Amino acid sequence: MIGYLSGTVVYSDSTKSIILTAQGVGYEVSTSTPLVPNRDVALFISHIIREQSQDLYGFETVDDKKFFEMLLDVNGIGPKSAFSLVSHLGVQQIISAITFENVDILKSAPGVGKKSAEQIVLSLKDKVTKLEIGFATKEKPVKTGAKVNLENKQDAMLVKETLAACQGLGFKDQDVLPMIQKHLQSGSATRPEELVKIILKELR
Image (cartoon, rainbow, N blue to C red; front, side):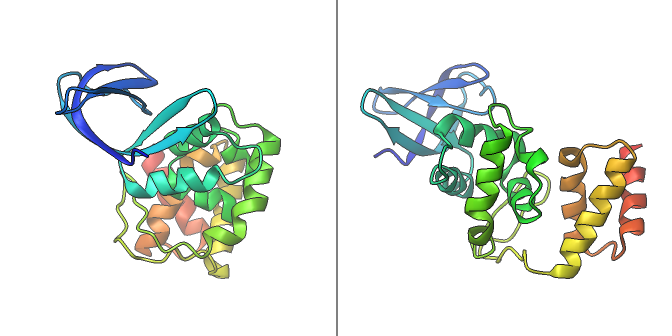
């Protein structure tokens, strides 16, 4: 099984990249964004073996790879849907959507329908509360080993009320949820109205 690849990008488009290793072998890998040709790259790989095919899915972090593989355990979720979720939403936003049972965010990922989104919430809600891997997003890294705190009822209520207020103002959940998470982690707001004001300032 291939779990990690490093080499030079010889071709890339919006869905696939070919990485040439030092051994002279070029591997075709599914990637979420185009990679720069002639640049060195290193990716964590999920190697999916089927009866008639083998596919490689590339990730920047090992946590993205782990969560992708967790999604594959959900009934009805295949590699393409799981990769779409991780690529378009990011791990932390998926976790928040599962925790607060926000099906709309999950089905905003291409190829994910309402039934699949509901199945993800049903299958993973209990599991995500026990995760202790170092999730990280491009906006705000989280220290490796930090437990994802998803059981704080006060925080959960704050997120729900803030999302409801932003929905009433015409904003989409997937646009404001990362901002809510950021300010929740920094402790910059403790009430929904405070958080909404901060978000509105950033969006203007």
